[in-house]
Image 1 (cartoon, rainbow, N blue to C red):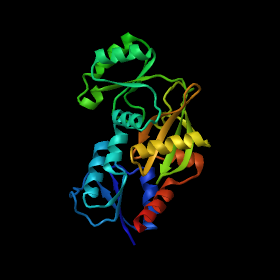
Image 2: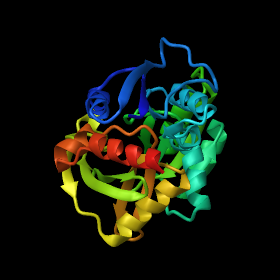
Image 3: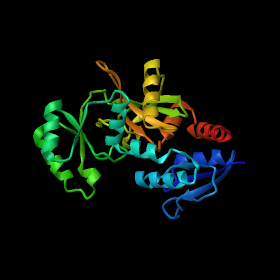
Image 4: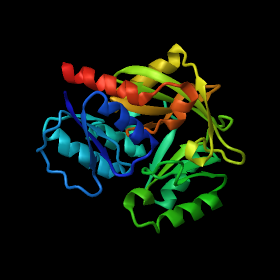
Length: 280
C-alpha cells in the first residue's frame, strides 16, 4: 500500500474529505507544515498532497518533498505560478490563454498611467491574496491614487505591488472549473451575494452546477497545462464580446462549494488519480 502525506496547516472541510478518502486507499499520514520541520530531500513517502493555506508554506513544503523525488500534488512550481497572480497572467499570456487586460504597476504613478490606458472603472489587485482580499474596483483617478498610496504603506513588497486590470461587467458571476490530471472534472457558476461584485464563496456567493461547452473545456485545460497543474481550479469570466477569459488559477483549490453544487467529490477523484499515477 502506498504511503501518502497530506500536508496541511489548517484542517478545513476539504482536508477532512481528503483524509477520509486517502485513508481508505493508502497508508496516509497528516503532516502539519506549520509545526513540524520538513527535512529537504529526505522522507519515506510515495506521494504528498499539498494543502497549506499559506502560498509560500505550501510551495516550500512541496519543494522539500520534490527534493526526495516524491510525487507531489501540486508541485512547488505550480503553486508559485498559480499563487502569484502576476506570474499567473504572465504564464497564461505566454501560452496564448486569453485573460482580462492587465498591467503590473509598482507605484501610484504607474497605476494611474495603466488605468488611463484601460479606462475607468478598473480593478486593482495585489499579486498575492485569496478570497477576494486586496481586490478593489476603482471608478476614478482620485480613488485610485488614494488606494495606491495606501497600498504603499503595506509591509510586504508583494502587497505593495499592484495589478491594474480592466473591469468586466459579468453580472456579478464567474465560472469555476476543476481540472484533474489533464481532464475536466466539472464546473460551477458562482453568483455574487447582494451588494457584492466579487463572486467569491468566502464573500457569500452562491453556487450552481454549470455545463461546460467545448470552448470552455479547451480553455481551462490549456490554462491548467500552462501552470503544469495536476489538480487546479480555474476561475473564468464569460463575456459577450470576447468569450471566455481566465481570471485566476488556484494551485491549492478549495472545493466545498463545487462539491455541494455538483455532487462530484474531488477528494475521491484525486485519490484515484494519485493511485493511478503511482502505479506508472
